[in-house]
Image (cartoon, each protein chain N blue to C red):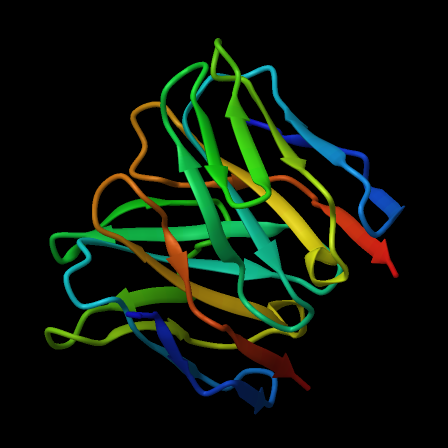
Length: 112
Length: 112
């Protein structure tokens, strides 16, 4: 069964460093998303991406965040200068049309 | 800001019992998703409902979307220990490409 895959599963980085989280959405899907979940809190929307551009973003998705679809399969989230409060599980998700979105297993980002 | 309230927050029942969990909002959603999430993993999609009054069945799980598309319920018949987990509802507002608002979840424990 097709699935969204994310790498790495766990990333530890020092405060102020840049990180890139990678995702391979389900191959025929059209909309792509990043969500995050701080430990013990709700899953929160960050950004949606369609037709090679951002379609919606939340207040959390400020200038330190960016997304890219560098080729036909990968979808990345870059955090330019990480802060302690960026520590969270980051989930990539994708959807074709009506059913979903489908989520990946997540990347646990720990900023130290 | 759209909010989704889930109840109960915690539910512990014996194997074989039936249960219902609720997801309520004052806002109208164009779609409503139910997910199940295990610790440290991504949400796994159970169902998407898009039509007011819609009922979908997935084996022993029955999902209903309210007529006004502001609420939903998940009913489990004859619960099994394997049903133990965190159940999340997530709504997509009208006009949005599935920018989901998540509820805080119902933690279900089914005891043998």
